[in-house]
Length: 140
Image 1 (cartoon, rainbow, N blue to C red):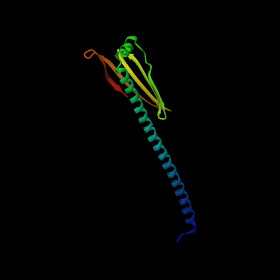
Image 2 (image 1 turned 90 degrees about the vertical axis):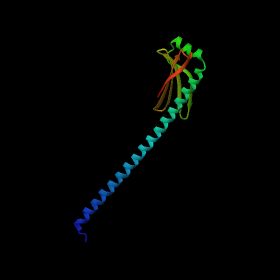
Image 3 (image 1 turned 30 degrees about the vertical axis):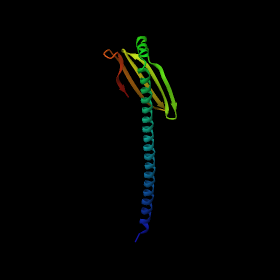
Image 4 (image 1 turned 135 degrees about the horizontal axis):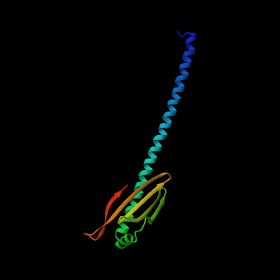
């Protein structure tokens, strides 16, 4: 049997439990939003990385076939400047820069969307044995 003085404490406990449950639901909702935001940021980052990789690879293929352009870049001592195409679509914007540094040809692709960015860099060196420029490294 519940006494009159117990009813007040039961009511107080019920209010505290409802309040705690509402805080828990709010926290779970915020956690869910943060998880969705993290997944979306990861997807955007991967799309930008793929965009930068493909742009750098296209530029590499294009200038790899043109040894004269590569030699001109080296003899001019060209600083990094936009050379390739600029790709802009719903996934983001990507620009390719080509220049010379330490007798190496550098192809640098930068893809960005809002505050997310991805970069890919190809470094080409002249191989005297084959008399061609070869890919020394690819960095992300």
